[in-house]
Image 1: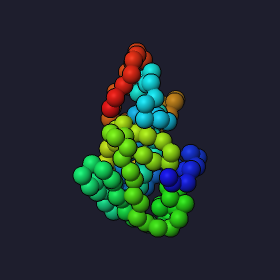
Image 2: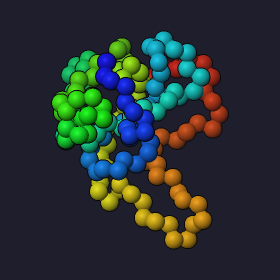
Image 3: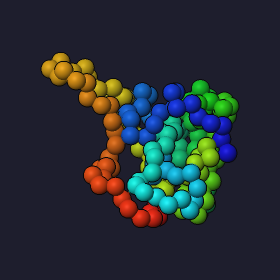
Length: 143
């Protein structure tokens, strides 16, 4: 298990990161493997920027952070290598389990939206590719 990440400093999947690079986004989260899901669960972190993401036989995931400072946010150490376990069909991180994960690139020009000059309300800085359900999902969900 990894040390608890500080939500105020850890990027969240679905929110545009402030640094460019390769990210591992975790979502469809739950607290236990057999948790009855009444929706799509919670969004997890956007882990990165990474040098690489590697999976071995769908049993483990290995990542390397670009910098020790970025690794510190997620591992509590300056070790740039991090191993993540897979429990059944769920990826484990920081005591939570995720049914979905994605690896994606954020280009430098994508890190910040240009300032709105004609809107009264600021647009959200979201990157989410998946559509949110309008009605809650009922019943047990397996990823």
